[in-house]
Structures are given as structure tokens and as C-alpha cells.
Length: 188
Image 1: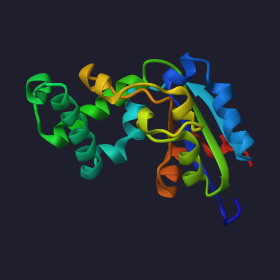
Image 2: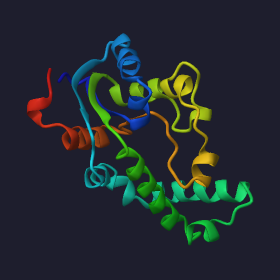
Image 3: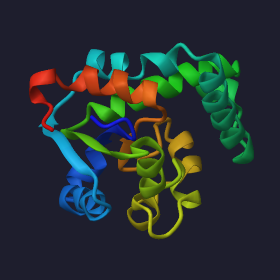
């Protein structure tokens, strides 16, 4: 791999697979001249997904952000998070968020993809758009195809269904690529 190139992992989530968006999503990356280095469809188990999200599950900042957003969504809708969830501790609610995410990611097949190109991590995240579909720009994958509401998701005690996961940093990409693919499965 050239020094100016990097890799990023994409996971097309069960909602993207169920809706038949695999080809459309892959095409977006090919049109931007990213190289597809590996791709496979799998049905992930809970332990495999927990291992994938292990860094976030042990990151108090990430857990606090998820927990706080969830608590605020409950309160904005006149619900008591402690009564609904059994706790209003932001870290504990964040941990519930991880479990909701793991549960969703194991509801059906997903497609794991490794893409390579200049500034892949940052560029991929631009192409997919904001985590929250309502904040994703039109023209991004989430902005064009995802309409799930974080408020509804919270009230239903589930994660927001936003079609796709992408690595958040070079370090995260390196871990995630190794988690989902062997060296022999990677091309180019």
C-alpha cells in the first residue's frame, strides 16, 4: 500500500442488505475510485459484534455520549429514563446502547467491505454521511436512503438503523480490517 493510501472497513448493516442496497452502496465507492480490496456477506454472531465494538464499549467518552443522547431523547418525549431503562446513569445507558447495536447487527446478514484509497477513512465518512439520518446531507448514503429517527429508536429501545458502519480512524480501520478479514482474503 502506498504511503498516501489507507484502508477503511465498511459494514453494510442488516437494513441495507434487507433493502437491496448493496450494489448502490458499492457503486458509490467505485465511482469515487476507491479500490475494493475485500468483500463478503456474513451473518455475524453476538461475540463477533461485541469484539468489533470493544473499543467503544470501553471508551467512557463514547459511552457517555450515547448514554446522554438516549436519556435526552426519553426526556424530550416525556419519558423517565430510569423508569424505562432501570437507570439514568449515562455510562450504564451507553452500555445498553452497545447491546442494542449488537442485537441489531446480528438480526440478519451484513456485508463487510475493505476499501482503499487516498484519505480513505475521512472520505468514506463523508460519502456515508452523519450517523443520525436527519443530519446526513442529501447526496450521502445515509442522507439519500436512511430515514430512521433517534427518538423513535430510543423509545423502542433499539439502535438507529442507518445502513452502514465505517471506520472512524486509521487505527480503528486497522483493527477492524484485521477483525473481519484474514491477510489472505485481502486483495491488492
